[in-house]
Length: 412
Image (tube, one colour):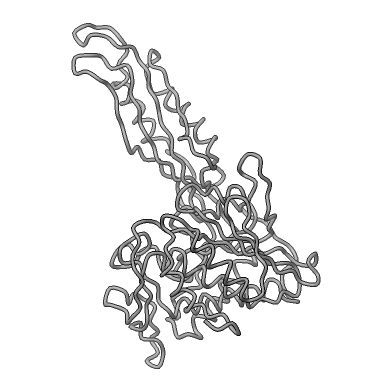
């Protein structure tokens, strides 16, 4: 990798070879060393995040744009490999122009290739190339998005005793989106419905049966969203009972039953608002002699709540336009990338809302052949990494150039 010019693909090759599924220490060192090699000072902040900044000569005359992605990957580690695309990796990225990329070119395989080392390579490329004319640009890399997001929570002031270190106006979050611009994502909460009755001998008409009360509780869960309006970008919320347990003896009226639920939320629902509403619904559907308690699962960082950015916001248009231009320049199909749509998974983008936020990057969560991210067949097309790097560079120029935006705008 030349020190004269950053090569996003060469960096990605090195990054995929760098394990980060048990510890991000080596990956964080690689990011810091890369920034240092190109003359950029960085800081390892509380929570293990890496921060670097570029200020224009007029930092107050433009927005503060934050580029964010994560350094960690999931287990097990999958070794690096690079070569021609296999039949199940060709997808729909090929151009119909015979002179262009035919979809069978280079791919990089390995754990983290698309989630999220490919996006990281693109963000680094854009950050290093940037020369903001107005506003300022921050690169913020977090260490544990795949687990508890303690780093991001500390960085954004969402953990006790911390303050918002970013205070961004606009956020570009790197994840595998197939070069689309994702403007919204559902939130993800987990909770338990605890039913408490009174134990008794099963032969007697006595006690209060907590397991029998689960019938009403499950009915309340099933009908919880009846009549709810769907979100214009994300559609309806979803509530799913996932685990149930109760009772301890086959000849005893059970005193306890617990149901675990998975919630995929849409704006403006909050975690606490969901918990309170579900508790009311279950209480109304269960016998009075059975106690009801609904609790969110304990975790050290806040749950990812749903976020949504206006698809007409200038941030969205800047990234989408840049993605279409970049895709064309590397020979991708005209319908590969540049579309505004929701993202299919919960991400740390949630922590940056309500500031206008989009999710963008090369690669896919899944393709026609099955799962890609978090899977044994994780890969990313080299041409998409190149297109993503160009997209980020063009987006920064559009937003922080002398004709760039001057305000953060509104989220919805």
